[in-house]
Length: 254
Image (cartoon, rainbow, N blue to C red; front, side, top):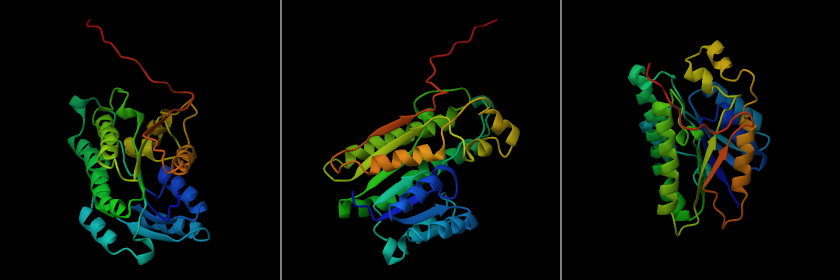
């Protein structure tokens, strides 16, 4: 497939950064979206010898700013044909009855509302040009439950359903949609954000395990994008060897 311009959200670190680095190697122009301008500038400088980059430094939940930025893209970046919806987060592991409502609201806004908003902004252009690929970064939490995942898992189930329903609506076009569902992954700020900066708690999640790396997910993106035009990869579930799906759990009264 001949792709020209990719928009990657959450591009300043982790999976987003790794995906951007791999796309740059293919000469694909990049729109790098994240909150931290200094990190985006550093990534742009790193990639400048391989491709052109445009930075959008804003919170993905700031829809008014995001819409304005998209309307005023430089000409070279206007025909976006890859959207990587990577920005997302988990907050807390408390059981539902003890969870912070604002944590729930932030996860729903970021993982569901803003992903849907950005996709909605770009879909008309993709359909008009009849070319492109939407890659959503979901999670195995959208399929397999675990204690404390409550709303986080629900938001990733939304991403899974949104992805397959997009495919249904886009049937008859050449636009492809894929949901990638990683398991345990280190080399990102995921657990640090989840535990609100508590490095000890974040580190304990991976103690004695070899989790996935951001580069593992970036390589899967490369494989997905480089399939023949008639092939759509609906979903990819990836776990480290040290992880496996769990079965139903029970609790005894007493």
